[in-house]
Image (cartoon, rainbow, N blue to C red):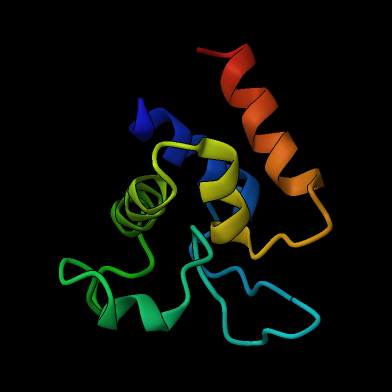
Length: 101
């Protein structure tokens, strides 16, 4: 289910390193275990400053994006990762998830 997908996604985001800093070309503000941006606090009521760097927040964001994309896991992960052209991170998560169901 989505819990397993969350574990896989967050692992590939940070190797579950709570203090990781994600170095993006255009985004210097994404940090933490699941690579959650602070603006999600204003979108999902359950996400707060206290829990944004958690698997729970990663689950909530991924669940939100899966619903937004009518159950399409690839589109949800593209949104999560901000993948426009580089599909490698999305495919890595999807392939690992499917191979280890």
